[in-house]
Length: 117
Length: 112
Image (tube, rainbow over all chains, first blue to last red; front, side):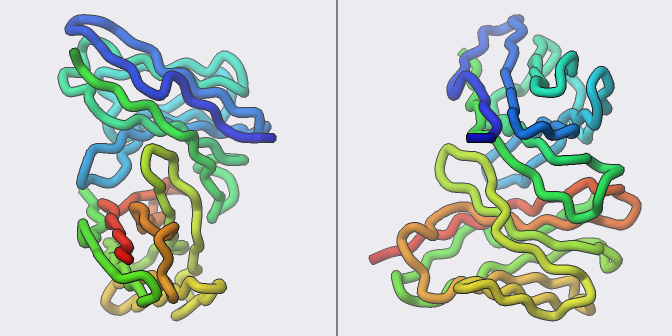
């Protein structure tokens, strides 16, 4: 079955540590996204990528980094510069992305809950 | 910045109708969406409405759009326990390309 897989489901970070969240999709989608979800707030866009080897900052990119070396994979690294990393992180994909067809459907993974030790 | 606002909580009895409300920011938004998030999971697209429509019905779901007041609502008829989830509205504001702006989410609790 096609879909988006995020791992791990739960992750703990020690102070000063970088951690990487995995996101893999087998939908053959060009575009991939990372969102952060905090209780009582909407989803906020961290980074997005519309094509392999290219990505752009979203609204809250500071303290995060990404790579897009393969179409299927869009890992997110939460660096030690992110001072408030505790949140639920959601990865999504779509066929074409922001410059594609308007009304493009986003497909979401099941999320990773990141907590600070 | 732009804020899409929703009530945080809604509680209904099983079998009743639920109405989830959303106030969005950009009157020139082209599409408006409703996504559902079950506990510990990602979001799923429930339905959407194009901005030149006032209403869209899809089985138990009815979307109403009031462009003058920038108000969007989702009505769920005959609400079931499986409808318990967080519901997010989202818009594509003018100049945002195809970039979605999500609301704060409404937690719907269905009681027996």
